[in-house]
Length: 374
Ligand SMILES: [Zn+2]
Ligand SMILES: [Zn+2]
Image (cartoon, rainbow, N blue to C red; front, side):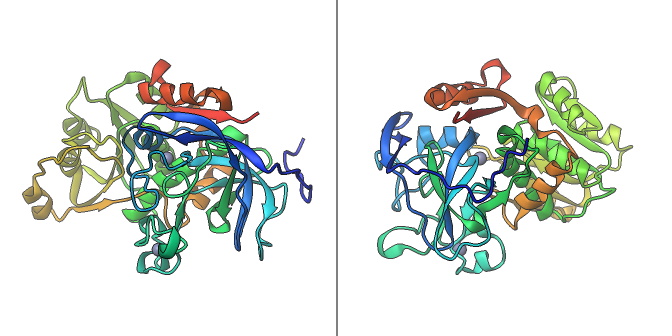
């Protein structure tokens, strides 16, 4: 049965249930007005939302969330950014989407007026967080600078919406933004990667889908490194040709062994380990490229001499720019990989703090924990 029902009208209440961030680590369930979509925006009824490591970070420490130019605590702010739902109301001028249409979202609606947004790098919008009072530049990053989806409804700019095919489940649709982030990292290093040798370091959600997207783009071989055998096993299911447990084998030597001493063209670094960049720089060949998608919390020492002498390019990405989510969705819609393999746990809206606890403490080796609204 198709899950989409076009041109339906939805009864929209005046208020909605929403979790808001109080003091650090404190989420409270409250009642908020249902937001109104403005020009080029729609109201999305949230149907499912995945928990991200960044949500855990925001709830505990604040950044990268920024509300009214400062910390997000006690500002009636609702986190949650990896969600999908149903369009239930259109703002003025919207004819790109229909009421009743299922959509998933990417996070950043850039301001559209800064240098980076004009280049398609809207996740690096120069007006990040400038969306209040006299400083309103139109930038929104739901769950970071504006209200997110730990609530029954959210307002989204149409630029952040990706249509969801009928056959795709709600839970799978929440994973598009994660796959899109991996796609953006591979884009940063050169995009079309058929035949290139690729290492992905760190089998978290982005790393695992980095393997899947890299394989779908034709990388050969795809090598995944990590510390946990069960995660590496999952990496194999998602397309890794080789996996290396760094507790058992030096990852640089393993990559040399697998590639016959040649090294790889690309490393997508998703571990955030302090020595990851140094190791990546020894895994790539001369002129190779490294994209940092994870990051350590403390400053780290880097052998820059090695990077310069070997003409190695190092990129950093933030999130999922340049419409990478749409390309990730194309792969998922074609079933080029099964993203649902990383969806490990499901909770109800009421149980959201428990869902976050599972994600934070990786209880039962939780990878992606999804909260379903009904
Ligand atoms: Zn996220
Ligand atoms: Zn901008």
